Length: 114
Image 1 (spheres, rainbow, N blue to C red):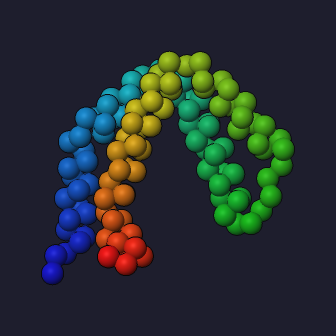
Image 2 (image 1 turned 30 degrees about the horizontal axis):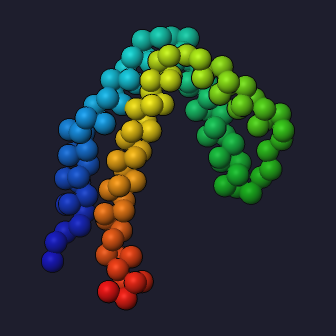
């Protein structure tokens, strides 16, 4: 029987060699060179994480909380290094979705009665 964790660890290593991963890494490195854009990006990530934690703990967040996240998002949408990073994230995400479909196929087959 195959050790699925060995396969997963190998897949993680293989992921690092893909063009999508390399493009994402390069875009993130370029973002970090722009101090203003990187600081804004970090603020957005921090606020997003705070709201997610509140939601996971069953807490309601206020309209002001949501508005501040939206305001940060609006500021980020016109910054080229952030736009580039988001585009590369989307490309990698598409590949990850495809991989998830492949990995999940045996489970799907069970429910199809195959």
